[in-house]
Amino acid sequence: ILVDVNVKHSEIQKVIFESSKSILKNVDLFDVYKDKNLGNNIKSMAYSLKFQSSSKTLTIIEVDKEMAKIMKKIKSEFNASQR
Image 1 (cartoon, rainbow, N blue to C red):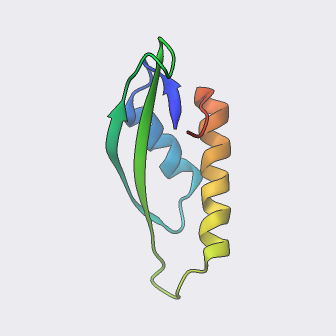
Image 2 (tube, rainbow, N blue to C red):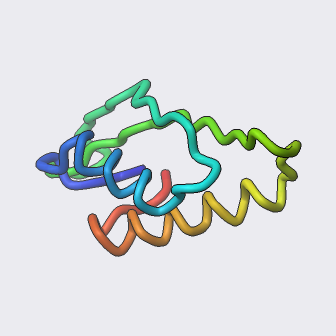
């Protein structure tokens, strides 16, 4: 995601977990990238999310639905965009 350079990982992580409480088990930040081509006050943050259910195998539709909720919330909270 692309966000303002002042946005902290802990803030994004909190919003992600709040957006998907039932099947989201882990959120890891694995890359932060800054470059003038992104914009002066913009950074790219890449996350790995782990979804899991103890009662069934998740479908791609269920995971996509959770991802859509998460992205909607991140976009609204941080004025973020997908890279």
